[in-house]
Image (cartoon, rainbow, N blue to C red):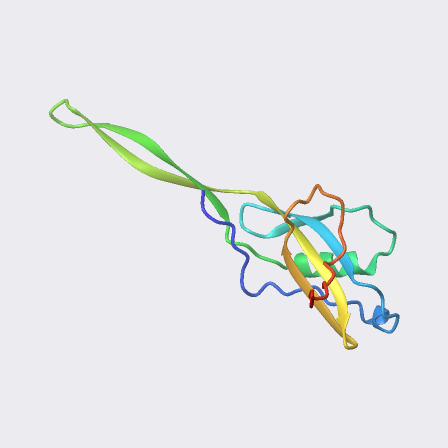
Length: 143
């Protein structure tokens, strides 16, 4: 099967502007993108319990709704037999491809750095694990 690469033009979600002044702690949103056979996002499912009116999840859903991926294709070899005029049978093996739907799990990190909104995205390593906070920076051991 071929790779399911995201299109380079996929825009990241926008940090909800009405929440910037609140200087909230970093927020992680984990979702499962259901992608149809043409590579379009058909559905965005939250992997975490949803809070009503969650502006961060709404931002993720709005951005991901326009995302595109290279379609996932399955290629199989199909045997084709053909009878020749002299009575012999010719066998040819031809590739046959078909696009398939798939899903990907993503993790979006919303945070503020020096008052600026920053949003990072990446594949969720383990979508079934409990949500985590961004890693803390450890102080170097200067002993």
